[in-house]
Length: 163
Image (cartoon, rainbow, N blue to C red; front, side):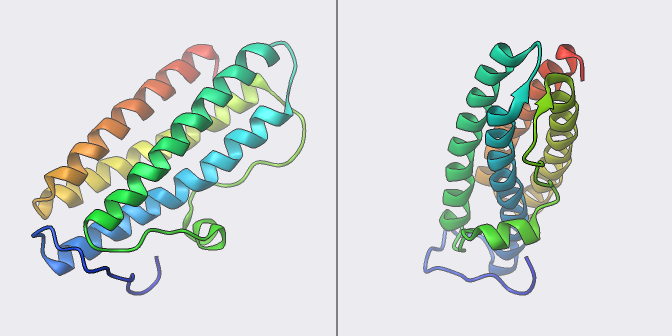
């Protein structure tokens, strides 16, 4: 996020500069999750072709999972004393994941695009884990490790599909 992010009254015993750096990384990740959530819905609505029934259900599972993660990440930002990215316009400015076109799309293209998005999230999470570790924030690091494992599984499964 550009500039300083808003703080709350919460103090969990981490230094102010540390929590600001961690919150900045968390908010960048949160922005990507918000864009991915919408992208997954778009794919869910617009998938066409041989794998429609299979991927239609898988995409619903993925966006439901991302919705839960959005809430967890936003709450973590609050827990460390900062405000999460809450406006879609801000999420779009911060996100490195791009929106999907609102057109029909086949399963192989969806899988390929999502593998790239999930790999981007993996890189982002590894950076977050390092930053959190540098500031002694085991809570954020632990959350990020769980998210990382999930994203690695998604890359594996989407690659096995044919991405």
